[in-house]
Length: 176
Image (cartoon, rainbow, N blue to C red):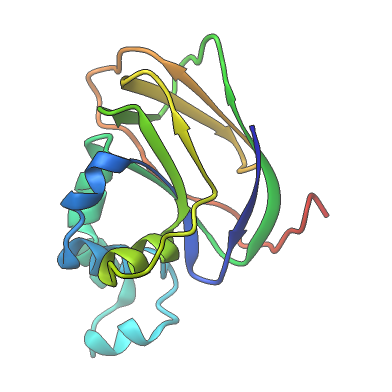
């Protein structure tokens, strides 16, 4: 399936099972906001005067990193991206570092900023990149940049997944 990915500054692409949305509380959404600001260039830096942003970011994003580390969500952190991408099923993915648990099989792909805004203000309707119904279970996720993301249903290893990835900050529009 092809989709157009549009992420503003300090944003990203999120994959999550719809059922996990209710677990994202205000503290986790605040942690996600901090996670989306790798360089400390937003107004959030004023919440932590006289502290190094790297230290703040490591400490304050613990909740969201643990949530992702349980396989409940994947976040690709990006800045100013407009790009055509592809999400395709693969027969086999070896050595995947990203694992996603889809207990209901309802995969939601949305921008991180949209997710934060719509969970903070439930009266808003969430604009999604796509929704996909698949068989419930664990999925290995592998990507080449952000252009091509592959998935394969399989049993996860006994390791903590690496479900947060920063993608190059270069602005791209449909491969240019």
